[in-house]
Length: 278
Length: 278
Image 1 (cartoon, rainbow over the protein chains, first blue to last red):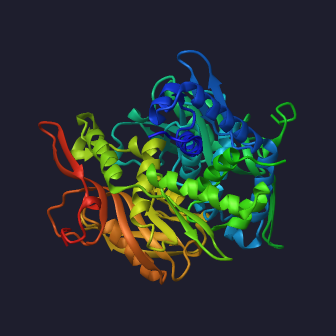
Image 2 (image 1 turned 120 degrees about the vertical axis):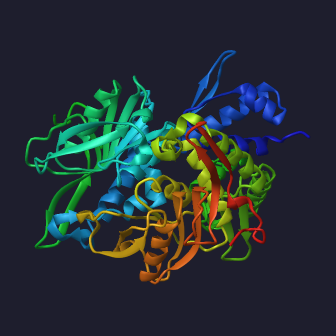
Image 3 (image 1 turned 180 degrees about the horizontal axis):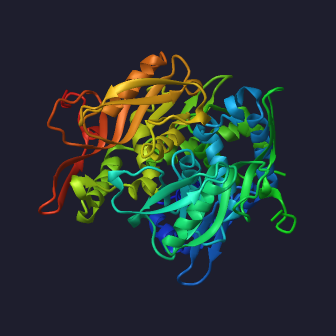
């Protein structure tokens, strides 16, 4: 049975979205649909153009016998900023204020629609960085890590502050919690990260940067490389931050427990590389 | 500018995949593309047919003025069984064996490709159950919960065994850990679950069922309803299980630390409702 173009376009779109950052040969599609490579090639240029026009991502085409296509989930910075401005508004709702000036954000980190967008935004920034693993710390960083890993199509690993018998041998590091100056310990299962991995560190919230710094230490212990750091939200911090060169989507500027106001603005993700404070 | 059918089909497919379980009106697409509703209607029937033929999910069409379409991610049980049989093989690799007869599975729970499939499989079983929230317990249940929540398009909530100041007021329950007979405590942020919610409970691994039973207790405390229970893997348990009426994708039948073998077979997900052991 002959497969019509319309059906191929639907199935190709579906397949690409399920297989981001994966090289797929023309031959694969040609066999799947019993269609000539020239037809598939035309299909793919329609998909490529539509994705580009509608800000749905980038379809990379590799010519030659070993060629094919690779779908790179991407979002323009303009669209990302729109989304983050919405999130800023959501995060500044006064009923999020918790005792001690903490801000409740677990609902946002459990919302599939927000996570899909956040994952896409963070992955866009690092899509050319040859990331081979995403790392975060339990528990609230996990949804961010998974959302980003879905878009980059690489595994994510979870660093823990407690030991678990179901993790096997682990490597642990001590780190200084930036805000409280306490010494803490974190560990990662030894088999979860390969030597030479290119690791993107993500987390839900950063204050002094101690936790992120701990993860940097773990990456060194594993003889892996840091590919980048991105947090969902950071809070303004008066002390000396232990890390620089990170990205944040949102920045909590001020929390006033008397007037019950939370001021949030877009984070360093949207700053020019040159302008960024060190 | 006139939008051609081929472009509409690509964009519609993309949009539906990003908005599962969401009613989208014909008017929305008609305005988006500046096309007549009759054309959109034809587009949608092509999408519906292609999704059905290729086991990509179900496109529900609602007629009338308030009508539209809703994309229900679904996978046939035959395809689900193929995937789970692959996972069984992967889980029975002898190098997963940990001291004490535990089985390492963190790598599987950090693999986007596996999680995408597992999320789709679990969501397929509960797509008609009016689930409004997915619940799990930290930390290793989180990836499963997120994967399922993506497919059902509902929020997921994370029950914790430790208290966190960033969660606000919580409700806690005590529960008996089925395997060790110890009394433990778990808690959930008060604002994370609405009264009357229909909750699907998921977890990575179940032995005696104590943890899942604790979550059932929490659901009662919140005056919510249990919509179903599904775990990634269960292990054969010789004692009396504290819960029945659950689904598992994989069942670890036996672990032999001498011969270093792990026997895994597809779980109760694939049993007929009648045949299922109570």
